Image (cartoon, rainbow, N blue to C red):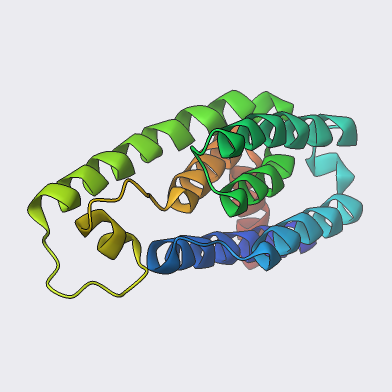
Length: 174
């Protein structure tokens, strides 16, 4: 039950990160801290639901290295890098490719949407500092936190952690 609660917390935090990133192109560091803390609590409560701990830290390290290089190249923000790394610890090394694949797919969708907004300017008065405002000004900024969250949830579903927790929850309900 604790693992399910921690997953629910992470889900809420990813939704908050998506909203924050779309509104301000920022992901607060606190979101990454909460995701990491939730993993620590879930792992300590039920290690049998997870891979060996080193496997989770390997995923964090791989994603941190890749996203840090992207940050240094100006392709991604620092908050995006920290948030992706924090979510990667939940996925473990076996889910990294699924995470990266679906993050890239959703990033492409958001990129296409940004180009469309840049060209069509569909919003009359977008909120200042928002993704919509940046796109309509001709900037190439995208809220990659949305893509990161989507990739993480796809990897968690693919890895079976979410479906296992849903099965456990349904057992409790019945």
